[in-house]
Image 1 (cartoon, rainbow, N blue to C red):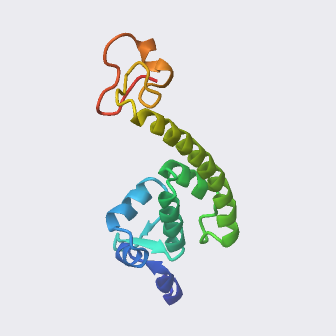
Image 2: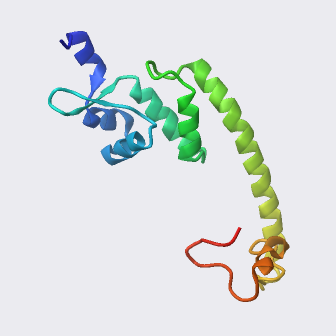
Image 3: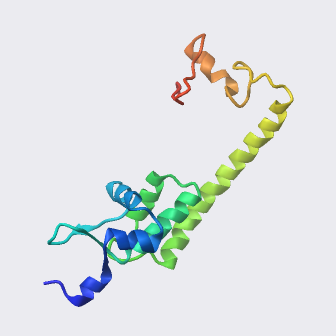
Length: 155
């Protein structure tokens, strides 16, 4: 039997969307990726524990930091399912992500510095451009076009 206390703690997908500012479709996507969990009630409707709001907030903050969903999912797996993430949990996760962000910032600064050197030349040579074909790695795959506009390329 479902108690009134349990009813008070569970939320519909619409309530989670309204309270978190995240679209219902995004919540369904997060669920398919294992980032959040719901259960089905007797009427086969999704119900979420109230703790999901903190998890959704953590997901959104991490996404804003540029953390890929795969990494967010791995981080959430390290947390217990039966409670909202705590300040201590956030401290551990943010320390890890902070190191990754520092490295990304370092790499972006290097890229920016190379971009500044390239602006004057204007050639964007496939052979010499440090941005498009650093170290001529594409030359290892033979002559001719090696990059496709779809973004796939040999590694």
